[in-house]
Image 1 (cartoon, one colour):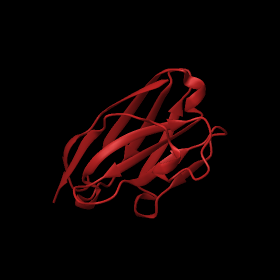
Image 2 (cartoon, rainbow, N blue to C red):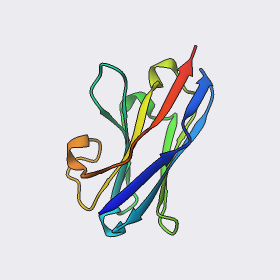
Image 3 (cartoon, rainbow, N blue to C red):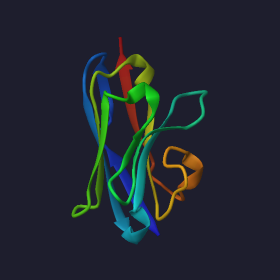
Length: 123
């Protein structure tokens, strides 16, 4: 089992920045692949950014160039640096993890999920 706890969400104005963190505990062999996902009210959960066991990263189109995913393996912590935030980025942000994932930005591939942290961007 893996436990994931997100933090760092909040309310910011458009153009601002936030840094999300996701602390992993438990059977961390199952955190080889980790990702950030978001879900806005009335919308499906979508992939934002993901990182593989080899450190390779993937980003969704709308966040490329603005968001950066990183992972500190020593601390078992995943990060998402979000810059130039837009109102469209408003959503609940979730951290997810699994040992093997076929498509890193697809939420269907992940077994372990955190409870989420809210990000609200005002215009």
